[in-house]
Length: 142
Image (cartoon, rainbow, N blue to C red; front, side, top):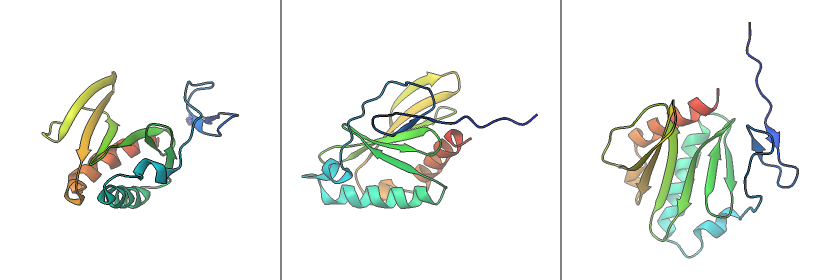
């Protein structure tokens, strides 16, 4: 028996896709450039390289909304909040990541753990971080 892929519900107001019909969200979008206005220029460079590497995993949707930049394949798998001098990256994987770079962890469900990482320089965007992001991407792309 084959599994049927669920179709995403599209908000009739903003056009964003969600796993659940009528899922709560803010329709308020914000241009990507506004997230980086007045911030350290290195942050945009870090962000752009991160996104270009993620696109190698497969289809990627980058939704810039009021307070964050959401990352999604089929479903949402991470988000970035741009601060004055760092990026706060959140991602969800299927197990606890044990690393000093993780500044926050949150159990999101029986099989999902949210993690927060701070990115301040290009060096923070290393192979280990990309492995975590690929894992989050693959889990939500099923």
